[in-house]
Amino acid sequence: MGLQKQDILSEKIEIMKNKMKKILDLHIHSKYSRACSKELELPQIAKACEERGIDIVVTGDFTHPLWFDHIKKNLIEDTPGIYKLKDDSSTTRFLLGTEIASIKKHKGKTRRIHLCLYAPSIEVVEKFNATLNENGFNLKADGRPILGMTSKDILQMMLSVDERMVMIPAHAWTPWFGIFGSNGGYDSLEEAFEELAPHIFAVETGLSSDPQMNWQWKELDTITLVSNSDAHSLQKLGREANVFNFQNEKDITYENIVKILQTGDKKQFQHTIEFYPEEGKYHADGHRDCQFYCDPKETKKYKGLCPKCKKPLVIGVLNRVNELSERNPSEKKTEERIPYKSIVPLPEILADVFSCGVGTKKVKEMYSQMIKKIGNEFFILNDATLESIEQGSTKEIRNAIERMRSGNIYVRPGYDGEFGVVKIFEENNRKNIQQLNLDLE
Image 1 (cartoon, helix red, strand yellow):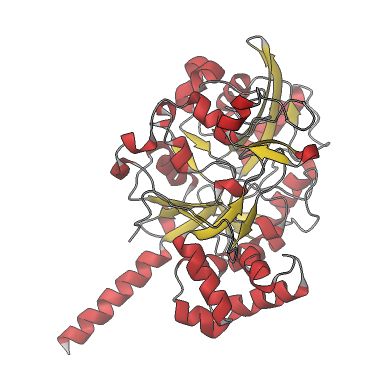
Image 2 (image 1 turned 90 degrees about the horizontal axis):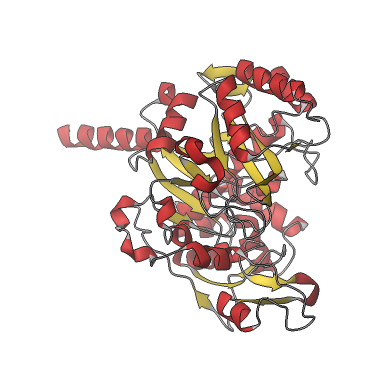
């Protein structure tokens, strides 16, 4: 009897541990950002996050006047700096954040940088937005406004409004709008932020790179690597995310989230959830008009020109990482790194199984069936038993998820703004993708 009680107690402790494991997506957009879905409103975002398995999501776009009104109308503070829907209709929690574009000539070159900004309260957002308005910036045109200031000057402005505000460079390697991008980026954080560089303690790796690629550059050894979706629609929420572990519900605050990002504490920052970087639309070098892509060695052979039309190739993330890196990723001890898991989103897996489009009725119906019978998408992709997946879907879907978990997939790389293509059941030219440090048990 005593043993049974001990087993029950152990099970309850394990359940509580899982409850304190939270998935965070810290970069999304609202319906007021260019090329974004009109469905992106807070109640719909909250519902979609529950289906995905996202516990905490950023509001996005807090500089836009109409969206900020929507935030104030729909959200109420739950724990310090963390918000929930006022009607308490969802378990999803929100953190105040946005993305802005910095476009300014700096050190002899026009820099085009996207930056994620975070604030500890609605009151601080109001002060920050007022400061932007006082400086004459147009905040109504786009949820991701363009500021004619350097990244450093924007950071200085934030800190003058409230020292608790945080900046994380977005999709750091993207050719045109990444802090390290091949077109318009910098060669280091120090070059961009000078004496303020210590305030940048995290960077977003972006869809076209993963932690293993970033580990090649010593510049990032002391920087926490984060992964987010940059979602422009409900369907893209959580395509990349972060897994944190908290002590209890009261421990989930803005201050503690920032502290985890600052310290990179592996006990609390358990791992990131990643796109396969080859699927990102700027992974390889290429020229979309000619449907040509290549790896960095071939780019060098072609002298940076498309062999079909002789126009310059768009230099992708892989090439830029190789350019700045000075070591093999294995040179840094595995135990010092925050690990990661690579996934293929469930709708893409279903579309491959059914040989149809991601947005088709067949995929949507099976997705809904699996969520209802098995659990949220992240649970299905990462934790559900293969037996329960088969019971809640089909044997072929079970096999597809098993292949995805083992990395037994084929990816045609993305390039020049064209997303790559993932195939689970590709018998020719299969690429078995291997990762370091995936033992997360």
